[in-house]
Length: 550
Image (cartoon, rainbow, N blue to C red; front, side, top):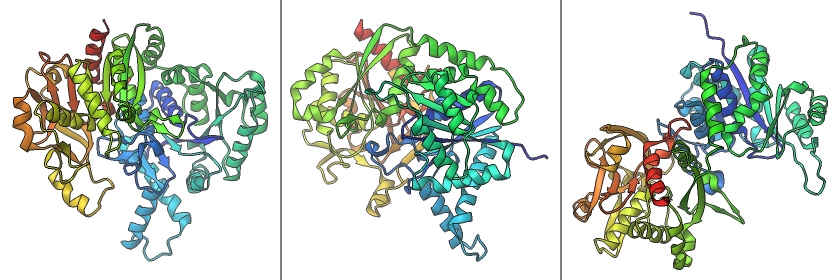
């Protein structure tokens, strides 16, 4: 059988980080999908961490979890959502992961006694991983995002890898630079010089960009396109304007206005073909959501928002997008407010502001900071009958709040905060105890997709359309302590989703006789929400919030 000719697109960043490389990769992939091509995406992060699992969300944003349990960068979530595909650990790599693999091979004599060197063995390992990801997905095109910006020391080996791939397969490899073009407020003119310098840094690594995605607050005019073309050695048609947009789902549509799809096909020597109906559906979605006027007020109460004097909503990006999808599906415009749980600890009187919201979400997290504030929020939502959705830690804390205030177990707690507490309503999973004792933290939680069985006559069963078995993604070490199940159930808590062996409580809820919507999940439903197929639990939550708003 002839070897499949596979194309590779490398996406790199210039001038500043956070410029939108992940959305660019997702958008390019979406456009190529609309041309009938099978696409997969890879994220390369240059840090030495083996994965994103041990990093605080305020350091690097949300930790995204795949079906196979890999803990990775939030851009992997963008890829899955835009392309509506399921990725695997082969689609993600870090400097640490690559070096770990090479060192393990050396220890196993897989290099046949050779002197193992940074070059060529590290780039060869990276190339091997990129090619394997393409083969596993049977992809026509592999879009590879190299994290960070050009000119950073950390990126050198990944850029060298890309250069080597281009050298050996000229017509099958192309480069896209996503660069920022500022409009300084006091000058009032768009400046191209930072991008020119970024391109020269890329040239110094032996790479010439084929396309420049020019990010800015406003669209580029033709004069700036011509100037970038002249000084960056690309054609004017290859300068794609990428102005700020109201929502990221407009980005593929805007790219197509500059004929990006046709340009990529041309540069990769692929037959020219028009967009199919799938892209039409995406265009209608991006257009429709701008027309929704009726708002719905949702509070997201977390503790990973503050980074210095700034707010980092990226810590909960999948939750935010999942709320949007369900709101859009119900023809509502979500109005999201980020509330720091620590504020309710400092000033409990602020709890009264929660009555202004149609729904409250407490997302996942770790550790003791801000927890008493979250418990106060959960109690307020329960007693004031405000629709509540607790995710992972948000479910665990709901159990603690219920135990303290309904069962009157005042010292109810979680082993995560008080390991030797008298009443550990939330306890460490048995198989996790040895791992914690050995300080085996990285990649050792209950991770990835697991099955759960739903109970008849519950909110959960109704939300999932009556299905009995569901599969959802997990990321936790702790669970509802079986010793307290009977007490919780007698007091009115309903465990509507359980593991097949009946040991792990996956979904907890209150009867709608007692509360319009009070649901917690041990898993993370946000990781499976998609723009055109919202997650059923978020949609059921939003329906309840809409009823409250009316």
